[in-house]
Length: 320
Image (cartoon, rainbow, N blue to C red; front, side, top):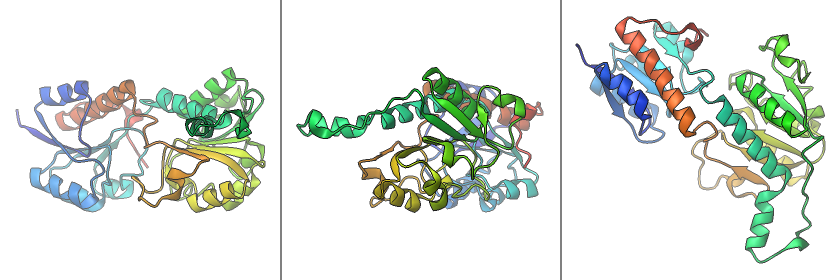
């Protein structure tokens, strides 16, 4: 049995996924966190990779060209913004993702952020830690009755809607790609431009594409009700972060919670990371123990199918 070379663009992989790959004769080559595309290309060339398991770091056309043996790029997750999809398809490479693998985890993280913002948990905790008490003038809100706007209503958005409904929130959702039947329990909004005006809390759950980059810009932020909250557990590029900072400092946006940033990891002078009205987590919404296993196993299954003549589940194949 020929050994297969698999480059993993991260330092580790869930044990069940490792077991699947190694049992089929795969050698897994790990990388430090957030490798550059050049570093990925160097390792792919060095080992003459048959497969890339992409979790962190860009997979560009140059990376793909580094090994003539390369047959598949499997995403450890759902979003494809780290992979040059057009380049892969031009080269006839198989692209796969792990749909649904982290939907519940991201939805839970989203609601945790909504609750933390609405209940003012971070500023209040800091105030008490500094020796203060109730003189802080806390702006703790009721959750029930708030309007939650979801930009993107796929598996994650729908999971968030179910959790939000349990808290008594009124849910509005926009996603032209989702069938009408999915909106039965929420109010459907037909365009992204209309959603901010009805959102006390605006939460993002759409992919990052050329069309959605900076979909939340200065105009969208100005259209929010004064004192609205913004939550992003999708991709950082969806928000114009300079415009968000300006809206927070002007009081138009009362607070924001971000799990995805335009530049990851952020530079030391990134102002939002220390802003008292902003919560930043290090892109971990989908990184629970269960979701890591699901993402890793689904990616490993796709790699093994591609390399051994098996069948890749069609819903995991990226076609455009």
